[in-house]
Length: 182
Image (cartoon, rainbow, N blue to C red; front, side):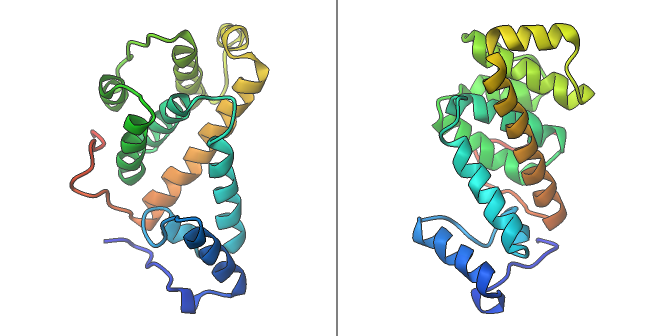
C-alpha cells in the first residue's frame, strides 16, 4: 500500500493535466511507483520525464544505464525501482547473473571494459561521493569526460527515482523478475 495516494486527473491543476495527457498520449504509464509522487509537482514531473528521455539516447548504452540504475536503487534500498530496473535491464541485454551479482553486492564479471568502468565509477561515487585520483584517471581513460558526466547525471536521476519510490511507499509486483535483497 502506498503512503501517498495517486492523483486522479480531475484532481490535478492544468499543468499537471498537461503532463498527464502527454504521458498517456505517448503510451506511458501513470499512477504507480515513483510517478505517484512526481504527479504532485508538474515541474518535477516534467523535468524527471525529460531526464528519462535523455537517458534513452545518451552516450551510455542501455545496459550501462541499467548498471547505474541498479547500483543506485540498491544503494537507496528502493525495492520498487529495483524490480522495474531489473526487468528493463534484462530487456536491454544485461545478463541475469550481472543483475543478481549487483543485487547481492558482489562484483559482476563483465565482458565489456566500458561496462566494467561504468560499474566501478558508479560504485565509487555512491560509496564516497567522489572519485579518487586513480578512479578519475581510470574513468577518464575508458569513458572519456562526456560519458563520465552522463554517468554522474544518471546516478542523480536514479537517486531521485529511488527516494521518490521509497517515500511514496511503492511496492514491487510479486511477479517481478528480481526482488531487492536485504
